[in-house]
Amino acid sequence: MRRRGLKRAAVGLLLAVSAPGHAQRAVDRAPSWEARADYLGTRAGAVHGGLGAAVPMNSSVRLAVVGGAGATLRDGDPSARAEAVLRLLLDPRGRQRWSFYGAGGLGVRWDRGLA
Image 1 (tube, rainbow, N blue to C red):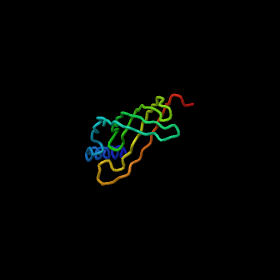
Image 2: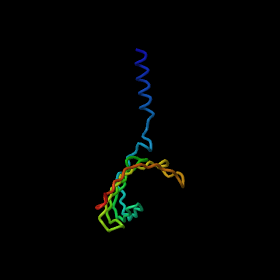
Image 3: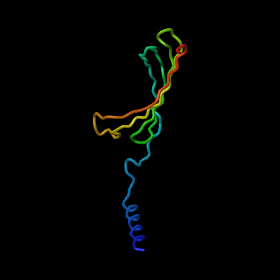
């Protein structure tokens, strides 16, 4: 009986003193759009124009998706690619002038005529 009373008191205290913090505020999920021109300097190089969008998942994480198309440099054959990248901001509120971030993702590329 005493233990149940302690649990109720603890939960009541937590509810009474908790207030929404900055991290709990709603995140503006409007995408930021981008247009790109990329040179892919590989053995089978290509030049692509692309469009993409970055969408905030929360205050620290953003998902960027890009699609591009163009031509290979060797023979002008069609070439395309798609990328998805997650970026983690280590200083999402911008308190420092310079800050680190981490990123990871997946990209795929298609070139006609390459085996």
